Image (cartoon, rainbow, N blue to C red; front, side, top):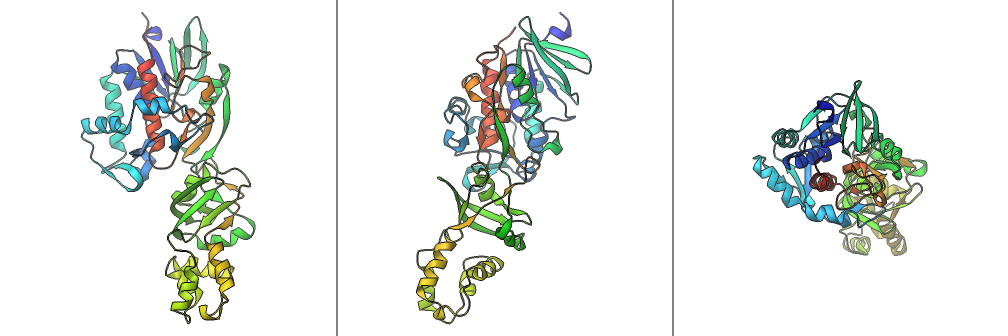
Length: 396
């Protein structure tokens, strides 16, 4: 048997999902070829979590994911959980810690997670072909053929794990969508997610606050998050804004509560207790000084609280708890942590990740229309979907 026909499965993409799938399938005795155009595996893993890789979240559940089919992720997430991945991390002696909101990080470096996945692939006898872009993919006579550097590799199963176009400087492209379309699969329009929002018009005045961060509650339609927001020279970022960006559509207004921990009519009570203090000083007790200054100016709260009518203070607090921003866009795929949209779940089995109309073709990870919240959820989807496909693949 020639090397060209010696594989049961070809996995395209040596990222989180691709390596997980390859290692899982290989451990079951399948002959696996893992191909990536990048010279090293897991490039996106390496930059995640500030270099420490927020590799999962203890609060993982289907409600933390966006998809045209909100039920699609249930099967894979239910069968491969954060505890399962933690067990793997423990087997490799990787120390970790929990930050806020169930987010788990390596104590050391994200390189430990990449090394773990590479070690799992090595143990499963996965052949890696790195630094070689795929020139062509086709299917005939029950086998998928992948052309790399003028050479053909074939297998009865093909897994698309090349992610989406977010962070193109790492080599990210829409390659998975092109292959999916070639085989008749539908694509949900890809868009940047977990991405900073840009401001224009009157909102652009807030750009003077670049670098200022505050705990807020931000809402878009029926979705809200309470985390830190960061003003930038272009608009809004920080965890709260990255979270809401995945739900934001062009021209949607955002409502920001700058005082999520403050009781109603707080300014009136401040007036009664300290009538000679200024509104700016009162706000500075609850907010960063520069933000308090800009907000008090925009609200025209001048002079001592004792000289400001109660009606004006009530109106000011109402606006401070529902300040409307209308972003004019996002910073695009270049700054997006992930891609929303992708290969439509209606064309895939939620249990095996295989295309219903193309036997042997699977899609996993970010390439699929399943997008998690910020905080390790997208990695957990990569592990779970990769594991699900790896368990379902069969030998030739």
